[in-house]
Length: 221
Image 1 (spheres, rainbow, N blue to C red):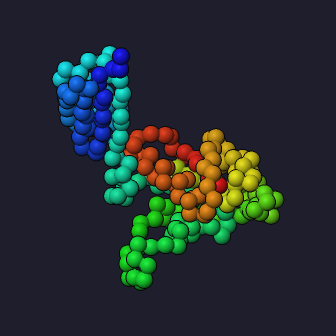
Image 2 (cartoon, one colour):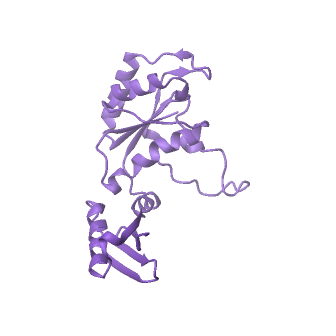
Image 3 (spheres, helix red, strand yellow):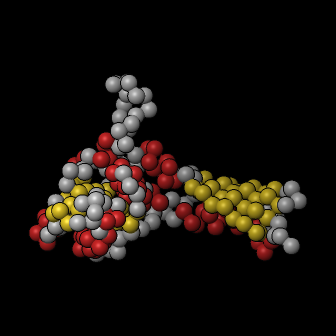
């Protein structure tokens, strides 16, 4: 027999809300204060409040969890300081985006906020071709220069967007380990902006979410 209760919990910046619905139609709700230093505490508090309201834990079949903390951080600009390492010539992809804008012919519309400030976007001299052939090899000297520039900025996190890295994954991951001594993850996407944005965006909210460790590294294709 299917279990009776389905639970949904939303962690917000101020409050954490929970609702439980039984398959017979009964509902229970809970609202507790959020715990910004560790959002998981409020999540557990909300669930325990549901139990006190009559939800039977062994009869819970499904729990949904969502949060607006990351969304709020992006909307308000209260994000981490991220340094983006980009293949030379691709520093301004974060500003150009996809080359589109909400109002195509409005020359006065405000530009969207950039996740990484231009001064925190560092070009790296390296390049591979669309066939995966090394056009310009990433040298130890270049890595040393980049490390010095990153250290001078003291960011919360580092994102690496190496153009066409799906064609030469080893070179990207090696650079990531050399730069920050952390294993890198690879997001495989085709165009430049869809490649770069997923590298920087998650890192921009790590302070708001209180997850990860300083100097977290993400790499993209």
